[in-house]
Length: 248
Image 1 (cartoon, rainbow, N blue to C red):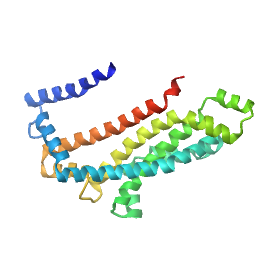
Image 2: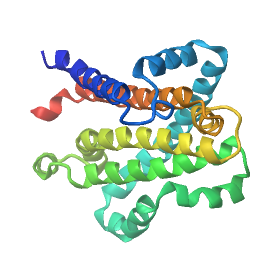
Image 3: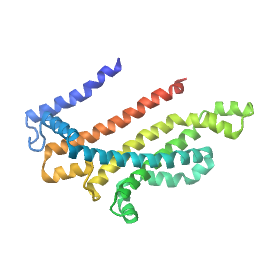
Image 4: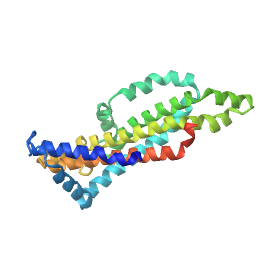
């Protein structure tokens, strides 16, 4: 029932956009009509060059996110398993997690050069910290009553970790994964704008802005938002499907 209301937001956005365009509250040159923008968006996702840019961005995002998961989840589980150890490195995690990823661009450029590796590395680093924090938080704040009951029943530390703590951490871990994939997309698109590349949605946005191809710029921005929305929706669906037990 609630899903039928999901269309209201996009329709409202397009309506407001069309009203602003029709009343020329903003110069039409700088704000093209929503229908022209949507047509341009369709041309991007159906054209060869547009698909190449889309594929390049998605490849970098998936690689950065995969690296972040491989590093972040095990590290978060290990740190969360010992609250004393986590508290000892909490400042480092929070410091870098609070540092804007854009401020780290020069460092990664020095290490990796003007390559795809630098884009993927900075996105993976920022995203891994989000996953580490949320996974460790989920482990630390697992339901103590279940852990205590398992100890009373004679379960070993490994059994408790594998059968209780790991599962208890998953809801918070999923929150971290959703935030991390969104951050990966944001960082990759920004790096495509400002770190040398000739492919990617970020490159397309900044190139359209330089050429004053405003419709293409808006369409590319919309495409980025759609990708982010899809990533978030996929994780929400997976969370609802595999974590039904969390409501019990």
